[in-house]
Amino acid sequence: MGTLVLLCPHFSKASVYDVNGDGAVTSADVTALYDYMLTGDNTYAATLDVDVDGAITSADITAIYNVLLIGEPLPERLVGGDISMLPRYEAAGAIYKDNNGNTISNILSYFGEQGWNAMRVRLFVNPANAPASAVAEGVCQDLAYVKALGKRIKDAGYVLVLDLHYSDTWADPSTQSVPAAWPSNDVEVLKDSVYNYTKHVLQEMIAAGARPDYIQTGNEITGGLLWPTGKTWNNIAAYLTRASQAVREVSPTTKIILHTELHRTSNGTGNIVADYFYEQAANYGLDYDIVGLSYYSAYHGDFAMLDEDLELIEAVSGDHPIMIMECGYGYAWALPDTKFNLASTYPYSDEGQKKFTVDMIAALKQHSRVKGLFWWWPEANEFNIPWQNQITTNWWNGSLFDNRTGQAQQALYELKQFVQ
Image (cartoon, rainbow, N blue to C red; front, top):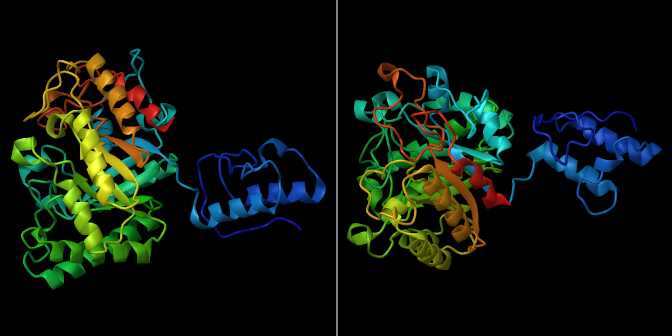
């Protein structure tokens, strides 16, 4: 039948679909299957059973076709981190070391070697408009920055999660400010702004070779987005509906995440409010794929509280999978404004952070719908960077590298247990 030529994307990561073992999934892999079925050439026989059903048939060819046309199936479980600041640390000369003190030459590849399979990156509308205090704490990710980092992540074979802050600065439970270039009170115009911006971002990311596999339409939007209009559910639903519409039109294979945090009333000790968000999401018929949550024990409680929170959310969110989009624990000091201090069980140390991670994974595995776990800012590392060139004004104490030595924390090596 000759050589089959397809106009299709080139997949750089080796996988079960890489029949000929050249490190890429291309039409050459289909050709290898055809040659075997026509001539019995068993050069690649050990890898030809692509769908692992015990036989080499046309179903294996179909499986590769599907990969070439729409991409490789996403892993059932994701584990990784939000590495939005990695290029800044690299450019400043940060030295990363493994837990034995050996220098790591390529930190992005190193994460994969430790079993990570996904990375998250945040995007601001125009961080040039952010206040200086926010810039000093990591607000710098414009579209050009994210396209470049996103392509690196995809080329390295990771699943890419794009986190849209519909703001020029931090969007979180305390603030959801409208971008300076958007009108702040015109709901109809804001709906169009959300749609057009989301569509533009996806088109640019795809053109740059950085199609997101997942996209967060808002960051920690427990109390809404685009305040003040986006504090009421009529408007929250309108904005998120337009965001989802843009995603489905431009990149239908990209899965949509609604991201909230496990906020509790009464200064952190009362009932959670995230379950109300997903209850309302169902009432308004919002189109999304994944429940995304932030969980920090310092603010959201111990694992018994986490278990309770997950059960409440599971009860109101249908059959949507759940992912922990942010988590972290201090390796030397308590996180700022800690409400729940678990130091008696999990000391603020390398060993304590490791134990916290092990126990958190065990707690999450009790919930079969929890399919993702992302560490917040694992790459934070000021080691070897002169103080006058420091990346952020304050160190992130929940990093997986010690800012003082550049050495990896033990917790980094435990995260892979979530997918095993």
